[in-house]
Length: 162
Image (tube, rainbow, N blue to C red; front, side, top):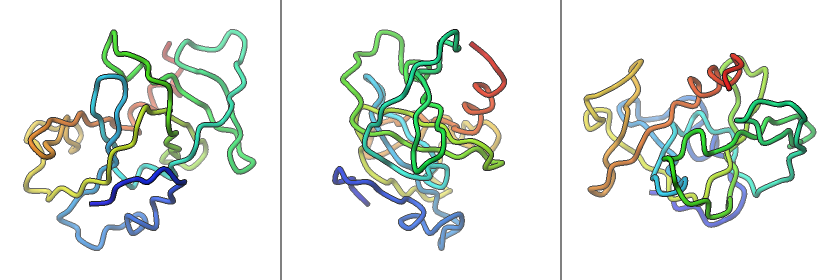
């Protein structure tokens, strides 16, 4: 189990890049978002970074906090409230998860309240309820962890939904 220590992380190095050496184990990055404990597949996260400034864009959709620059590239910073439970307390964003779209054409960032750990789950223990082959939630140390499908999230946002 890998615990995040507050520094910037290149998850590709920790997860073995796009291919896990153990095909029967799936790795997830867990984080707190409001009152919810969530996770995403580790291979979907390009980096974990310190918060950075995002410039608001006039007349932008409600889900877009603004555009930032990371490593010289534009990054859309999405509002985590589109994922958080309604009424969740905003504790201030401690880290930002940087995602790349599947086509590698765009990046987006999700500010999160707190990173938890890198969780390895044997495929045989993943929840039976799945969508597109991905779990809706996983169980970790007796606690449910809600799965966020970053590709579906990106496609929904990129498609122009408000």
